[in-house]
Each structure stands twice: as C-alpha cells, then as structure tokens.
Length: 529
Image 1 (cartoon, rainbow, N blue to C red):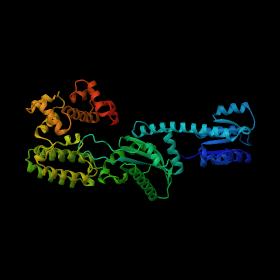
Image 2: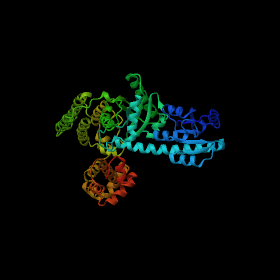
Image 3: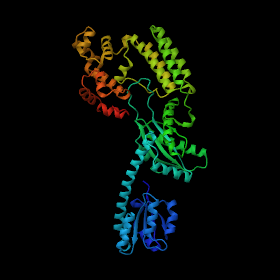
Image 4: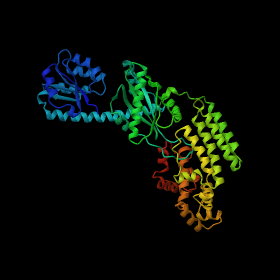
C-alpha cells in the first residue's frame, strides 16, 4: 500500500523540522511529501503534491490556518487537516471543529508517543473511508457498465481530471478460458482471480503509465478492469504498454493456476461511453476463440459481422439436420464427415459467428448421437453425467472441427463387445432419459425391459457403479440445472418438469445434490427465479 502523503505548513522552519524528525513517518505508513512556509506556498503545492493529511499552524501572516483550512476543505475531497497552535484558545478550537478539521494540536504537548497515537488513528480512519468510497464507486461503476445508471459525480470528476491532464481510460476485458459449448451442459466454469487479487498482482500502484482503478465481475468467468492511462508520447507507446500489462497479468494468472484471455479496448475519455464500450467488448469477446486459449487481442481489430449472417448459419444448420436424417450407418458416417469439413471451411474469420458455430455443432452432435445409438454406445449425456467427457480441444474453431472428426473415427472403430454397458443397462438409461419427468420406480423401468426390479438393481449397480435411483436423481438434477440457467420457469414449475410432485421436496433433493438451493444456484449463474 502506498504511504499516505503529508504536508506540513508553518511559517517557522524549526517547527517543521521538529515535527518531521520526531518520528519515523514511513514506518507508520506516511510520507512527508511537502513543506510550506506560507499559506500561498501550501495552496500552490496542493495540485502537484495532492496530500491526504496536512499539519498546519493556525497563526500565519497574510492567511491564517483557519481560513486556509476552509479553502482547502472546500476544494479538495478526502483531505484531513490537523491544526497546530502554541495557545489554548477555545474560540480557535470551536471554529476548527465547525469547519471540519480532523484535529486541534497543541505544539508544546507534542511528543513521539501522542503523535504516533494520532497517526495510527488517522490511518485507520483513512482506511475505513477508502473502503467505503471504493465500495460505493464499485457499485456505481457496475450499474453504469450494465446500463442501469448514468455516470455520477465520481466518474464525471475522473473525466474532468483526464481532460485537464491529457489522460485517458481503457478497459481490459478478462475472460476465463472455458470450452466452447459444443454440448450445452453445465460445464464447470474455469475461475478468474478475484478483483482484489488482480489489484494485488498489479501492486496496487501505477504500472508504467497505467493505473489500475477498479475491476468488476460481469459473470462468473468474465471481468472488466477499468484503467487510467497517463498521457503518452505516441499511440504506439500506448499500445505497447497496454499489451505489456495484459501479458503480465496473463502470465501472473497462469502462475496461480488460471488460464485467461484478454481483450483490450480503445482508449476513451467520455464517461457516457462506458456502457456502450462494455457491450462492445462483451459482444466481441465471443470471437476470442478464433485464436485459442490465452490470447491477447485489441477490440478494434474485430468487426462484428452483419446481423443477417446468423440467419445464413441458421439455415445451414437446418439443412445439415435434414441431410443427416433417415440415413443408414455407412451413409450417415460419410455424410457427417463431409458436412463437418465443408462447414468449417466456411467458418473463416470474416464469416465466423459464435451463435452460428453453436447451431451447426448442435446439428453435428445430433448426427453423432444417431451413430452412437446405432452402435449401442452411451449417449454424450451419459458420458457427461459420468464425467467422462473431454472438452479440452473446444477452445478453438480448429480444435472443435478435429474433435468432431475424431468422434466419427471413434464411433466407427467401436464394437458392441467393447461397450462398457450391457444392452439392458443401455436400454434402462434410455428409458430414464425419455421418462425422467414421470414418476419412475425400478420396477416400472424393469417392466419396460421385461426384467424384474431386483435383477435390474443388481445389474445396474454392478456395471454403472451407482444405483438406479441415484442415476435417476443425477439425471433429473442436471436437467433442473439447465432449466434454472436458461428457462423462465419458476422453481415449482421446474420441480414438476423433472418428476417431483412438490417444490419443497425438489428443493431438498437439489440442495443435498448440489450444496445450493435452486434459488442460490440460479443466482450464481446470473438468473433469478
């Protein structure tokens, strides 16, 4: 933490020297940054020194300490003033309290012990005030970025200071490297450092010409860092230093076990642009996957494609689905591989659209699932529930294409003999997947397979390692989590849709299974039920 800057104002140099040498200021977290022998000299230094604490003599020629305090406190927020005097004067003390000074100090009673005690108290006050100010500023900034509020005085003040000094601002959009949702299941999101941890990584100070102002989490795997950039000699220097900081953050995050991609905004001064720039970064961040994991890109390098492009991919996805229907195994295998290669040739950067990629992935997954059923293989949903899905290659367009083609090869080389489950167990799983919203018992499932409930219990436990009841519950909970994240249904409606008669019992089972109530889970994913 940077030391608190102190100014000492007194028309007697011996008094200044005595106060300066009385204690080790730095050891207590303070720095005597300026000395002034007159009120005018103090006023001249305020802008450049920016002290947070001023020790000031009351009796000075031309302008006394009380009047100087009034001027400083009316112009500079957050400054604390301790008035010093050689006289016990009730009127001075009363006036000092009225204008808002932090202390009234008798010079002849000053010693190391009581000065130390005063500074410790003032430091604690500064800390509490700073925490409160940061909290208020952070909440306000979050509201402005979301478009819920207009920039208030704190942001407008930053804008005025930037215009006066030639500084500007920028965003770093920090995105955890999570797999692209080739399969729309509840993949556990990779983590980002907490905003306070980023600040600690930056050293809580200026980094070259850049100053870390604040960091806001916009979702569980995305954050926006708000920075100030000092006036640079050239645009080239600005780009060089922002990229160097992004690279530094990325490397430090990697040391701590995080994988992060970063998008750098253009510089700006107007605070009215905050919400618009945030939306722009949110939209463009989806294109980071064109470069794979741990990439650093500038937002101005991206041009969001025309809105009609998504309609083209929607039509393409529908055509792929129609083409793959009603094919035998050999025909489907060949057509699927052909369609995958053709589609990904078209997914070049100028035609890439993240929603378009998601649509055609859904079409290809349906084709792969059809092949898996023909082979008697477990579905991707089964693999996900058993935590046997490997999504490590889903961080880039090329990686997704290779995974899809490799899946075709894996399915082709699969034989029923190598299936991990017997046909009866696979049929039981399929029945559960189709009827999970109904009232299910082991006997009912066994009856549909022409086997007894006891036989199915024994067979299922031996092969899957879980009871039929646990498997049903796990499948229902995954479906419930999907609905809590993406659907408008209320909790009681979701409980009915996943096979529970009462919302209360569903909530109990959900919390036991996930550790969260349905409401807590919905809120953790940015939804509200």
